Length: 356
Image (cartoon, rainbow, N blue to C red; front, side, top):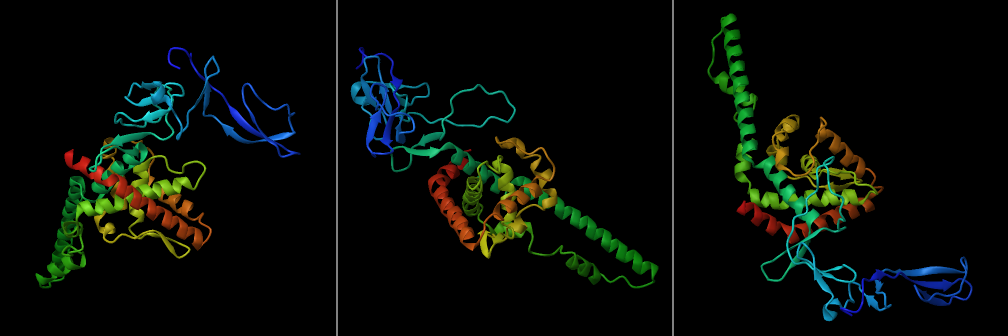
């Protein structure tokens, strides 16, 4: 009762069952059975009852709470409406960003929500609640796909490789001309074209032509949720998370889609067509991302050969699938999660990229 009841405290409530008779009785602050230890077992524990100094009880759970009717609702510093007795969040009032701190940086010790969430307004009206971790990984996954396949830096990397190949071709042509001159043979111009064709200089299967034939939005929409679902599914199968930095995992998993991963005859990681032509060469990926890590808020790797090490960890985790049945279960779980993430987040992520 407002103005009468003082601060409330949590009252643990148990249901105890007698081992010999099977009788069940409640046990709480003011009432408990006279059974001795070892004569009973606790079948249920409740942490949703609160009591004031006058022993007035309040039941606060996900389905039962009368704080709004009794005027016990308070507003937090970030605009959320909370129960004034238990402190449980009843309604999200504002949108907020949840950001991980860099490892090793000083962070004030505060209570962190187990499921950080944010609210957004969908097109149909009302509020839709999302997990901020998944939201952040979807944005990072879309950035990784775009940077690796369609960014301006990726096009510049192809142009540099093209110029290097041209210089190597010119060197071969000069060597051919000098060799013919030493041997007193005619220098045939058509041999220049043959040398260029053999070195693949005129091939249409290069980054420029394949990139021109792709739809960047559709490709990013297909690949970004796949990377996030693989990250969540692989980490969920272990007691401690195998992968901590999502951008590093996303880059490595993207390279794994060049040929895919087959376990017990099941394609657990699909092979995506033309990804091998769009991605930079694995030998250049560390230098390529040395300029891009600064744009990602997650921790970036400091060790060398992060691509090889992360791919080896992915393969070691997939080798733990014992048989084809577990491999099929892993594939269905990751595919279903990818569809759910794409449906729930990607329209908002794409709109955010267009506005930025």
